[in-house]
Image 1 (cartoon, rainbow over the protein chains, first blue to last red):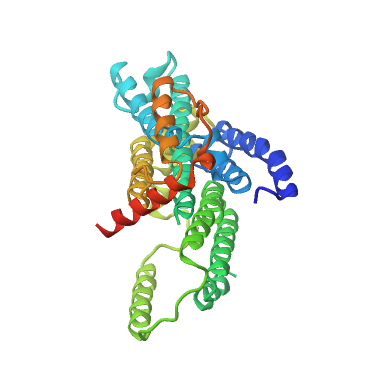
Image 2: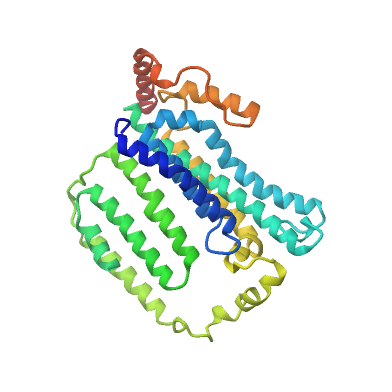
Length: 140
Length: 213
């Protein structure tokens, strides 16, 4: 689909807004519907759209396969790491109260970090799955 | 609407239309969840069902073709099994407390505590987020691990972990520099598009061997 001008231009216009919306969903998850999972999906869909329009090779140059795998693992690592940090700081595993002086701030910080971990994993996994399915077609 | 879409899904033989209808089904479910005031669930359903999974199904269709083969065996036994399971499930719902009744057990265990105290304990207004990320943090960690495991499974099954794609070498190199620097650098040499066709043929052949052996 690399020669379709309307699709290319449309995607170029849309992708920044999709990414922005993903971040909005991520950071507004504390106040409205949304959170790391949905934000990760939206973030991934922006790159999948890019890969569909501009081709898999271009997308892999923007977002290398190794980086995507790394993201998938990094998110779990962030999540579990928050738990370990709370352990070290004297609380239970994943008890965010100890992360800051006030328990509420600790909870907010912990949730922010944990949601970031979810976002990273979901984003990495979805793009990696798409690469796996789409890259298969090239082999044939 | 959901029932009509589901029936159409069963009857259709063109898998492309089936993929599209499955997306529509998800979107309708999302609407249903929204009317039930479960906006977070609806959001997830719309993003997963109507978005990502449709794309993954279409990616699979590009590999396997668009037409479903005609079934050779009769579908009587599956139909009996499905009807039986369905009636057992419906029978199971007869015992359930009435929908929306404030006296339901689900509204008297921890739900009042979450609804009343999470504002003070967690400090964020969205109860769904505080339950997901804080009260039920272990579950969400497990869920994240499940997603990660799903990625590992897909990559193992689809062969993404082996260096046999056209751009396999590029990816491996990128990954190495990736691990070294931690950011996402662009590969220095030309992309896989510039690989000589001879190498491609060789690799495809190697893949065939891997399948045979």
